[in-house]
Length: 123
Image 1 (cartoon, rainbow, N blue to C red):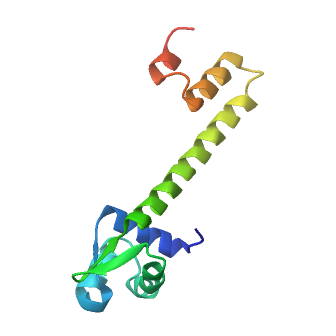
Image 2: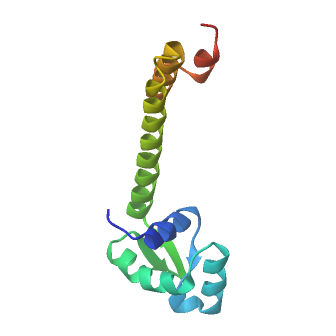
């Protein structure tokens, strides 16, 4: 899904907890958004887009994430984690000549074929 950084941040915040709806919260919305590191004015811009995409909904004066919105958010989190894990495994491979056992252990740990306890165990 192609969202702006601000839209991703709003979606992540809504996955944690609801926010007051800017349409009905006014000052309460601005304070709550700012307290969570969001630009209240940008939230007002992003809400219609995210609502149209069915990633959030406005309910009883609150902005809440939809099931689709939560799924999109957590998929992005999972993909970022997989990428980071892949980077760690590639980094270990780059040092394979100097420490072949270490590189193999890191690669197996990243793949999930061994546990952390097994990786830290005796050679």
